[in-house]
Length: 391
Image (cartoon, rainbow, N blue to C red):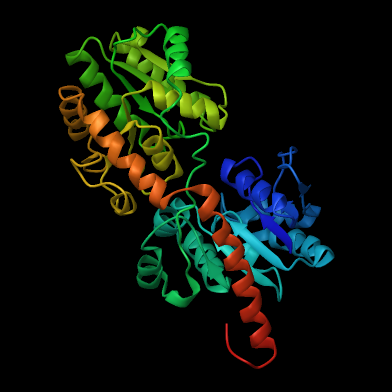
């Protein structure tokens, strides 16, 4: 198949899917906004360019920050007409969904990221317009969220027949509990004693991902338990925001026990940090079935999570993880104290989570479902054109 992605080339999930499909023998093209200039292996990178008039409309006259999302459809459509792909797959309904909707008479696949449909579309009328148009134009909507069909039908009146959610899974050759030696080296590099409990914040260093909630909870916990250490991974987050979090810990006299990982980490390095930590925390405002959650579970790190619907498809409170009310730093602190007072929970949770991940979340098996979705969408479009059915 000739496949065109409309997506952020720097996103790890975009790269993973592009490289997987290229490795399966498909002709891959990735259309994205600058400044990304390093294509995934096996994919051709294209930066569609707006002309001067369109740039004026997009960035000077259209309400911020949505002008680019709305007007990029023109250069993207021109490039798609040249490529004439079999499949156009847009990743992120707000950023690339309107360009997908304007891609012409081609098979359109849409993958929402989560905050676009769960958060942005509820905060702005323009965002809702862009997201709704993307959802309704797509032949198939697929992402890693069990129960997505129910939500999209209720919130956006999208027919269930268009929605194919599935767990993408994780690479179990990388994410597992066998990185103990590397984890010990990580501790030594950071100056963390071998027996000190470590709490990991692996989500992106931006406010949306609940980092302030985590920091406030950890300050409370670390003032009560003097041996606890905390580690924050910035990822593709914001250095200025990270400085705000650092300053808060410094004001509490905790700087020496908090570690910030600023460099971008490979998957193997992320797995090593999960192996190093006793528990990890995730509390964004909204989420799908987070790949980060699955990675932590696969590595045997105990999940302490905001009680979000998507997480409940994998976690049962007290059996293989702990929940707390979203946004409640005091409740998170209490859950962390509960865990730290019963560190045997880590091994109990790890055994159950390893079983779940093996059964439900193996990337090598699950990723093949994307090809099935593409083929089915092409077959439906062909039947529709030939008068044999409807999309």
